[in-house]
Image (cartoon, rainbow, N blue to C red; front, top):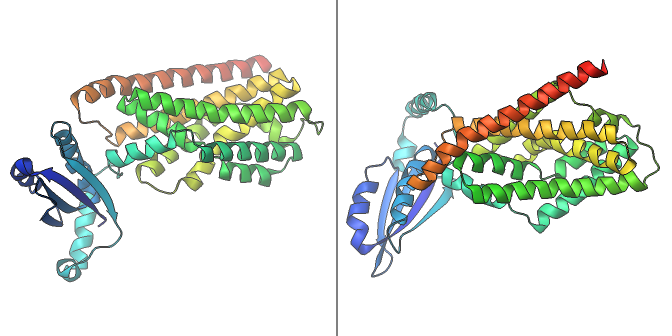
Length: 340
């Protein structure tokens, strides 16, 4: 079983009641020490599945108690006489029973919010990686090199802001939602600007397979976007490495954005329209899958005013994205019939 360490600094005059409450939770080990004349330090070693419930309680207390601080520390390894002597068969059976009771394993809400705040913010690293990936992808289009385009998708950090938008819409955190949306649009804007310049000044031709394939949109692309969004959401929920899943999301976002910019730069507005539809379909499909996965995983705030906003934001987000996806699907089908 994976463990994490919760450290809580508690003012002396609140220690007895909080200590009594914390001991009611399931924990592996529990230590108390005197941090100063005014505060006590409580350290609780718990299984990963118990972390969020304890942090929710501590978050509620922190909202009303001064001098109350909490830290969550990952634990790589833990063993004691009890764990060493424990029957491995019993441990396996216990974990299997726990896994059956939980539909979707994930990190705690507090850890995920910290990750969202980081990935939904514009930084120099994010900007430089977007610029480099846009240049590499555009060159790959002009040279008709699939390997170069794949290389661009490996370095493109496009998964973070999109997943952050979906996550914050489930929580109803409109401030973080706006920041993540701006970050995502900022990245797409950079890719468009660079590819427009290449499309305008390049004389290498606009008839490569890598380019033409991203100027057409079909119903199949909705499935690609949904699968990409679901994979990205699962990777985020379980704090897995985003590199491989990031490539999958970049497949849906980076190439069609480059194709749209190149088309605008070259004056091929019909191709630009097709690429624009593809970008929009992919973004909405990713958001639909991610919002659904986050809702299923049980992501919920604790404070009353945040719960109220989340209860409104979550269903509205799903309904809005579904409507957009349906409209786009109808546009694709009607456009196909007209062209036929």
